[in-house]
Image (tube, rainbow, N blue to C red; front, side, top):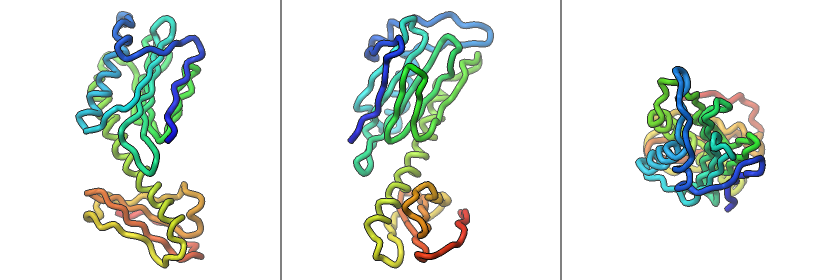
Length: 221
């Protein structure tokens, strides 16, 4: 299982979460609200814990003047040999917005490289900004996207293991009431279309069309 990466080689240095406490926060203005790096990380970890998600590894880096912070947190949530991670960055000098990125593998670098599968938070430090509300909404988005990523990965895995089956595979675990996701980004599924249905409670139901089907996929609920 590969870990996500935090690269610090452009004037920043790695520190622990406790050391973030001593990083000074500049004064705000009428339109800009600086955010203490330690409080951002604390709000993120607390919000994850409220949703029964633990952090198994974390590392952080700050620039020499303490204005920019970068971090990577590996979560306990795993699937098919992959571990989900959260990348975070923040600045108090108006050079970039507070941002979170989430994915199987996350890359965060002090040269502004910031890569994940999706970015649930990208917020300006406005005077009316609420850190708790922003992080809470971001983690909710993260959880919804994680389920979709899990199901799409399951579809690809099932497709590769069941070439000789005429139909798909069903794991009945509830009713279909959350719509469908078309797994069009999985190149090796063509020409057999695969649909991944989102269910509540979580279930995986995959439908495989005829091997030579040319029908255009449609969205449904």
